Length: 87
Image (cartoon, rainbow, N blue to C red; front, side, top):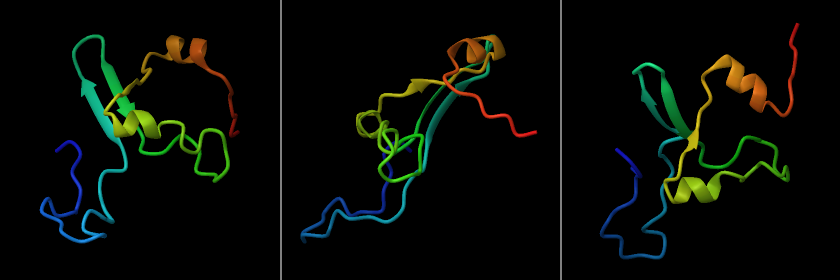
């Protein structure tokens, strides 16, 4: 269910719309050929407070605007900004 949360729709107190659980990621995949997918995280790509990408996807998350998830290897390599090699 999109936008599911644990708050009451009939909240009548200051904290009535607060909730402590919900989705950590939204993902839509189409398994036709070629495979396509869209994805969005509630904050950003970084988990480091103060990082420029800590909350970079929050606006898109709040307005249900997904980002295309690159699945094709060649497209991913062409779009890369940084690479970490864990050998």
